[in-house]
Amino acid sequence: MVMKDLRNVRIDYNLDSLTETDVRKNPQEQLINWMDTAIDKKIPEPTAFCLSTIKHDLTVSSRIVLAKEIEDTGLIFYTNYNSAKGLDIAKNGSGSAVFFWAELQRQVRIEGELEKIPCIQSDSYYSMRPLDSKIGAWASPQSEIIADRTVLENNFKKYKEKFSKSDPGRPSFWGGIKLSFKTIEFWQGRQNRLHDRIKYRKKNEGWDIIRLAP
Ligand SMILES: Cc1cc2nc3c(=O)[nH]c(=O)nc-3n(C[C@H](O)[C@H](O)[C@H](O)COP(=O)(O)O)c2cc1C
Image 1 (cartoon, rainbow, N blue to C red):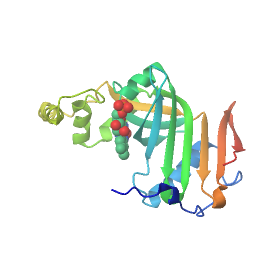
Image 2 (cartoon, rainbow, N blue to C red; image 1 turned 90 degrees about the vertical axis):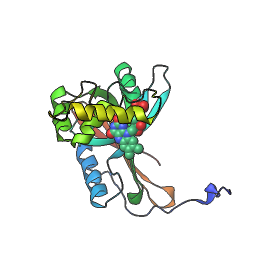
Image 3 (cartoon, rainbow, N blue to C red; image 1 turned 135 degrees about the horizontal axis):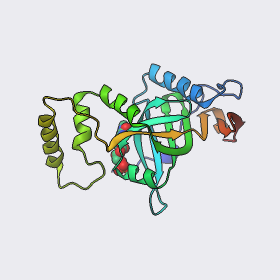
């Protein structure tokens, strides 16, 4: 196998620009604006972002999750609270998120605190999920070592049978986590690598808007 020369893989960034006056007054509106564009342009998995958490030994761990709600104070995703990330968050609430929409030449970086959302809000989202996804949440001991795939398939069958007559309630170990907005940076690729970086920093009740060198 011949490895392609990665040093020659590059594109021009020239689709759009972003200025201090273009951006909305708060990061929630700006994120919704870019998210709507990503969805309208049919970008694959537009809600997917890379979430980083801090492990007990202070090393970092990252994975993709899906954003499900954008509130004025933060971004919500759903997961298993007993997963590796769930345990990280229970011990250390610092987190960061990155969206990358290649087709739009855009990146968004968020830093803030991670915490569980109220049970009633998790119940509401769980109740909207297709039945098999609800059962999937029961069936997977996320992040645990399992002997083989049959463990999952047998678990799924077991819970499918168990919930054949009644709707499954939300498992207490599954629900939403909110990453609060402390800083959010919007990056738009530009020509000659002179990209636009506009960053919101939380300031009392409002937001500071600053520009960073690319
Ligand atoms: C496109 C995509 C979407 C995903 N969405 C979620 C999600 O919303 N919630 C989740 O818990 N895991 C999601 N995963 C799986 C995570 O990346 C990860 O494998 C899992 O959460 C276990 O991570 P952990 O062991 O660090 O807790 C997704 C993976 C991909 C590739």
